Amino acid sequence: MFLFDRNNNTSILLAGILALTVGVGVARFVFTSLLPPMLDDFITISFAGILASINYAGYLSGSLFSIFIKDIHSKVRFFKIGLVLCVVTSLLLGISENNLVWGISRYLAGFGAAMALVVGSAIVMLKLKDTNKTKAMGIHFSGLGFSIVITDLLMRAVFYFGGNWQDAWLILALFGTIFSAYSAYILSFDKEPKANIVKHKFDKTLFSPLVIVLILAYFTEGVGMVVQATFLPDIVNSLEGLEGYGGYTWLAVGIAGIPASILWMRLAHRFGSINIMIAAMLLQIVGILIPTFSANIYFNLVSGILFGATFIGLVALFMNYGGQLANKNPVFIMGAITAAYGLGQIVAPLYCIAFIEYFNSYSPALYLTAFIVFIGILLLVFANCKLKHLKPNI
Image (cartoon, rainbow, N blue to C red; front, side, top):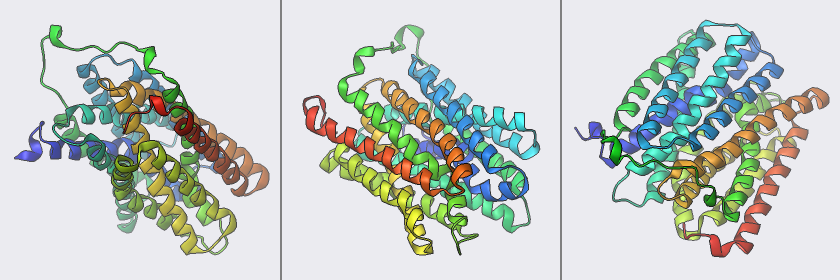
């Protein structure tokens, strides 16, 4: 059966999507879906923000670690370890209410997520054969949208049948185990004699001015992404008349994200990656600012749609662009830019907590976030204007 053929592009892409569902959905984004019931029953908003930063610190660690993984079989091994971490740490959240256990679990989940996203995406890129990789990787990164929708629907099903947030973590760990088994089987390579294994050394010459600008711009996108990724349901629930609508907005994020990477990557193929990054980040700013001036449910659904469509598309755009700049060792630049992204994700929840507690409102944090994303746009405009001679046609 072709779905169990390790060299079939369809099975490779399916395995990549399921790996993203585990690494990004189970280990990271479903925390946002479960935040409102957990806030009602267990954690405070301050502790939620701290846990988010701890999770992103783990993600940063994993991203940096991925840069130094030398050969493909080591990449596969750590990818599989990452999937196991994503599942086990989710299981722990379902059986423990100890703050230290939660902190350690969120850190290890972040590390596992980096292995699933950064290393897993590099493996997918290397395994794909005889295809336009920009378009194919757009399909792969649609898994980011699927990860939100699938995990959110699983969470809703648990509550529908009378379960609670602890039960949701256990069910998510179960499905994560099934998805991980398939991804781990497909995203492997046949063993080669040690003499034939290509090892990639740390290559500082890859850090061209274009790559440095890309890293800085992706840092600002990490900030832009994480505020809504952590707090969006609670942001919407805090608006007058929209109590209880936050979960629907978050579901809209995932649904909008499913086709987003495919569409953005097709546009990038036609108009150039950096041009499309700029357009996506401009739309993201609009989505970030909507809750600051409107409590209309339809406008805030648009905010969720814009967020899902842009942040998922931007992950695909930056990761694909960076991976192709690095040529035969895509994990190198993928890891470097994702480390910057992770650093932005650590910083943002912390200033959000401070602003929320001081102003008793999300609006100041959203204003600052939009401004930081705008700085990222200026960096990309600079890259377009000044670094054209270094920019490949991807």
